[in-house]
Length: 345
Image (cartoon, rainbow, N blue to C red):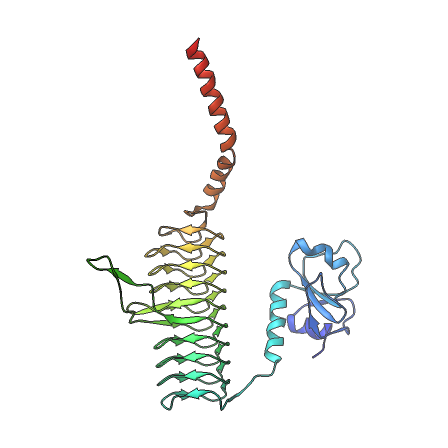
């Protein structure tokens, strides 16, 4: 599909600087763009590319003023990154939507399947499962007994959803994710042999959640592990049993949350960050990548860093001292040597 700069500007409430009739049929990075593509500039680090890009159209922020001539047609918008995301969403919606149930899928008789669904070859749907309208299940998806997948959700190839779990509306679960596997619960007996604690709960994923590839979310021992509405989990994340992830909280790849931890709304976890079990993290907390949180964070809006993690400003001040330790060590050794000489005299 082709779109003119004028049509794109009208959709984004933007202003065209250049040829309003120029057309694009694809998107690209500003540094790799070719003729007929649309790019965007939001990060100042990429400003140099706007003068050399071959993109036909570039989205820019309203406050950006080029210092040299730009060959591309520009569209000024309030937020170039957000506007680019809207265009990608529009393009995604324009793609053909698959529907129908493959004869190679296996659906138990007691399962309920809604209208407008797509169920691909080699999908299994268990007893008393509910697959609501307009859901899409791609090849090798496993939906266990008594699972509910609500409207407009997508389970990509190889997703496994264990028994009793619930997936809300408009969710996207990416390839290889496992929802509802047993929590890591074991208790040593008198012989120090670990006995498995049955995990009798489930996982509840609320509406508009996205779960990345090969992420695992453990079922609770009792009750539910909750992923609240709007949360976004990246690839390769481990969520332990009885955890609660708050609304609109986001986590980057390889984060790990230990059992029974409660995380507030609108938090941000960097890659490879982790939280200890049985703690609480307040709303709007930001966790720097590779940080480890050992204790409850009570103050909303905190930014923490390090292992163990603490306030980022305190960490940065401490790190300045840390970098000086070799020099401080040498100075102490010199002082010790001087003291020995003085004692000898």
